[in-house]
Length: 502
Ligand SMILES: *[C@@H]1O[C@H](CO)[C@@H](O)[C@H](O)[C@H]1NC(C)=O
Image 1 (cartoon, rainbow, N blue to C red):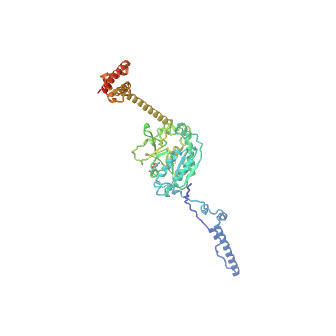
Image 2 (spheres, protein in one colour):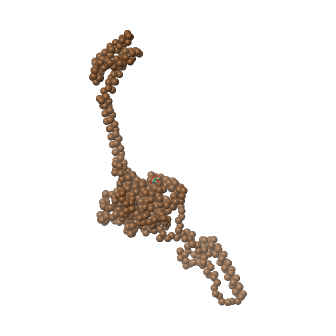
Image 3 (cartoon, helix red, strand yellow):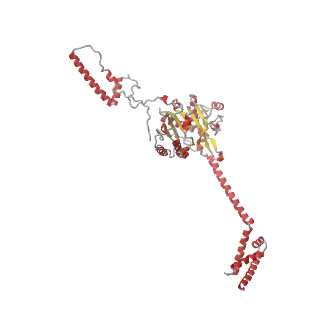
């Protein structure tokens, strides 16, 4: 993996040890005998040389230096003064508070994406990553892969290689962390199980756990922002990070809708977890046991809260803000200081809420600003529910039945039309039948073929002036038919005679 260190480190090397020379400095001494003085000078010089050698030795042997200086200092130096350790990093957290123009100030963002059986959506997610306009080198990626039975992990590796293959350093993302941890979720990942009411509280608590694990493992002192993004977002502005950051809020979310097939109305609010607190909901919360978790968007809890999703006006000002209490987790931009202050995703009932909704409430409780943008919308992927699929299958079946019915009806009408509206057709057929009979009667006479034909027509016409009448007779009465054939034979014979005798 691509790993880059971003140490703000101020590793100071305080080499040679000021302490080592301190005790060797000349002091004022009373006069003494010259010989004694010379001996003393020699001793001092020798000691200086020995100490110098020792100091040089210390310089090249850090471990001995650390040990000896530690002993020498006898705890007189504090830890910060003792910063000759190469592993010490220094961070000034007042520089990573997050501002409205983070991209200008090189503020780093930690982008967190929890993944669970996410393989089908990963290529789309990486397409989004490639399109983000915030300088990629300022974004660190953190993935938590858990409880996945599909190819999420190998696919993730593959897509990351591709993502980081960019030419310019600005195209390449910063540090990338992949955490693996199963939380043993019992709830299936299919749409029905995920969104069923009964599963919600347990599912939300489990999601909360994985978010907390991911964040606590990946957040570095260099991050000013944390961006949470679901992989199944289908459409979002490439500038979303800057767009959200410009508001300079502690926690901010866009509106999240999803497209729908036409028969379901074309579009629909998706994320109902972003809401403002209501009196009704607070009253309801008071009646519930301590451990219960209210989940928004289900008829079971009628909270009458104003939802961010329902306030959307497609032509509204995308910069309009709305104060929120609960937030949804599809796309959250938060200042890292919110998390550093201890706000997290409660995996328990916090004010009767868990996970992202509980996070919103907790941030609010700690006096952070929590805001949503009702007219700034991103689009979640439409995954048909089991009901939708059933409905669509029924519609498809109905459509096919209708088509088959229409075709059968059309065929029937065509047949009737050919029988009644076009008697000439039937007449021609009858005519050729008669001709056939005449031909048989005539034998294999090659000459006079043309005349014969004309005569047959003549005779047939003579047999009944009304064509339909003839048809009726021919079709119906055997005796009549025989009679006409006989007439034809007679006429044909005359004709032949005519021909033979010019
Ligand atoms: C990313 O940008 C490309 C080129 O504009 C576009 O074709 C693609 O659909 C975008 N991806 C997403 C997920 O919006």
